[in-house]
Length: 165
Image (tube, rainbow, N blue to C red; front, side, top):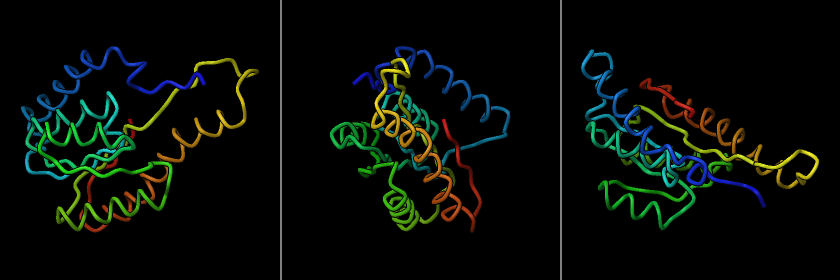
């Protein structure tokens, strides 16, 4: 199958980490967004963009719950950043809702949710199977819907932000 993860496609993650760092620093310097002490959930934390986003949030003083499918990568990143992690299939509305509810209980409140989940299918439409199509749509759209649906329920009491990358 020609599915490629963000890791495989994003050789620019290190370059983009400078962008992410610049965004965080710019927001802090201008006083518009201080994330220190804030609590975030990052879905897709085991991928390239997600893991770098977690690094930048931790460097800025945030508490982060790592969520993703790859338990080994999550454990390594969790150890590196000294944060908790949870294996979650972001295409499952139930698993995402459970993850957010547990994180809210553990951390006391959630200030933001980032969805860094996604994949790209690099093949012509006429050679794409129905299963490949459904998998791509589920990864890219169902995960965003699950994040928004469960995220609203999690954030509605105290406010916060949902960011879909």
